[in-house]
Length: 192
Image (cartoon, rainbow, N blue to C red; front, side, top):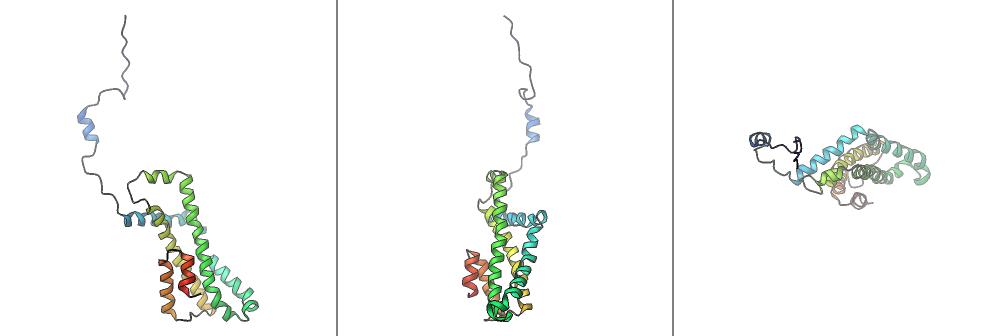
């Protein structure tokens, strides 16, 4: 009876312990990121997506301008009697519509991440689990702010004046950004 020995492959060869220890890190692993750091990282990731999908920047800047001008000059005189009266109602509505349009990119981005398997990779990492959603919403908040500045600046040019003054306008916009639901916050905080 003959005994044959299996050829040793790199996976079955004995490993020198000295070589193994030199390849492994002896330092302690880095600390787990806190919730704020993880959320800000994902917010930065959401803002970097604008570079790859520049149409998002178009929706933040040009879309509100086009819609505001179109509604003001096409429907303003017909619906309210004068453009100055119509602008007072139009600008808060355009703000709500702009937020709804911009929110579409959060849903689209999260859907893409889930369908491509990136969410599965994120689940294996040691960070605060809601940071993916919180970061996406923080990135949206930056886009909302840019869009609100564009819409209000255009509204001021067209004759919009907030009935309680500009300090109240800024406080109400801040209230809207802090509201759990942006569209509900616009309606309640703006005073519509």
